[in-house]
Structures are given as structure tokens and as C-alpha cells.
Image 1 (tube, rainbow over the protein chains, first blue to last red):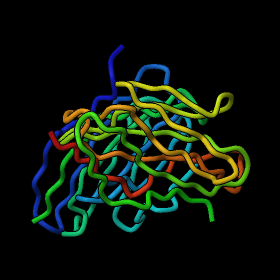
Image 2: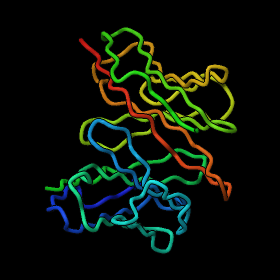
Image 3: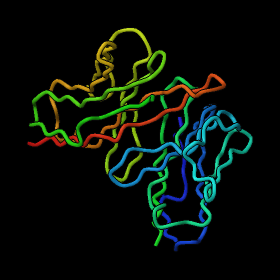
Length: 113
Length: 117
């Protein structure tokens, strides 16, 4: 079974630029998550989708971050404009449903300079 | 407030000795609890879960966890630690959202496990 795919693995951008991350979840997984993990901290949930609907985005900085899940499968997370404090690893995960374990991709390491 | 806590930033243990990584939680309703491990420059890897049933849950790589409802804890354990177990460990819990019957998955701050030869 293929795992969660994320791209790119690494990205370096200047502040005020924009960036987008892509995620392809495990086939058949209805729930998709985007987490931000700052070095030395636990993952912070940015947004959670159930199929193509958002069930929680309470910690998403909506003035600069946006996310969508097309047709309930792939998802993109965008930052525009980026700030220095956005430097982190962005993790995508998926699960069959609300009460099952989530499986994670390798993550995208973003450095904002 | 619904939350999950890992009270220790780091746990040090000698190879061959038993290890425990602590986790406590606060949720409304029945808890759904998980442990994950993260190796350097890797994503999180699922170890084990508690949904219902036996309080002692067995998972990957010889790890197990004990669910204690009265102490609201879900400590990760292993009878004999290996140097290769050295990594970052995260406890996670599903917390109910206010509407729609949904829940979200939140993580503790993590505990770094260092196993010394």
C-alpha cells in the first residue's frame, strides 16, 4: 500500500514570497490533516478535512495560509506572503476516518530567509 | 480544556533496561489515544493505539502502552530498551469538536528518548 506522498521535500524562499505544498493521501482515506512542526515542538494541527469539507481550521493563520482538498483526494497548502516564523516542517497525514490512526508523509521542510 | 501532555522533555535509559515515556490527557467522552515515533528528518510513524478494550496495548517494535482511566494516563513502555529506540516520541489524542460530531487529532510536545549503550 502506497503511503502519504508530499512534495517538495525541501523549499527555501525569501520572506514575503509565496509557496505551495502538495499532498496525496493514502487511497480511500477520507480524513486529511496538515500539521506545522517547528523544530523541537510537537505537530500543530493547521487544518483537517473530512472528504473535501473543512472540519477544523481554528489554528490556521487565514490571513496568509490557505488550503484546499480537490475532489476529496489531493490537497494543497499555500502560504502567501511567507514570514520568517513560518520556517518549519509541514506534515500531511491521512486516516480512514475520524477514529482511526493517521499515517504521515515525509514532510516538507520550509526555510524562510 | 481538552489536551494532551508529555511531562518529560527527555528520558535517558541504559540499553537493556525498561523504559517508560509518560503521557496524560484531558478529553470529554471516551479517549482515543495514540503513540507515534519520529526519527531525524522523517515523518511520524504510528506505534500503537487505544480505542477500547484491554488496558495494555501492544504495538510495533516491542512497545506497549498502559491505559489508566482513573489517572487519565497512557504511558508508553518497553521491557528492554535498544540504542536504536533513541528518537522523539509523541502522544496524541482525538478531541471532540463543538459541532458536527467530528473530532480532531492533537499531539503532545514530544519526549526525546536517549538510550545509552
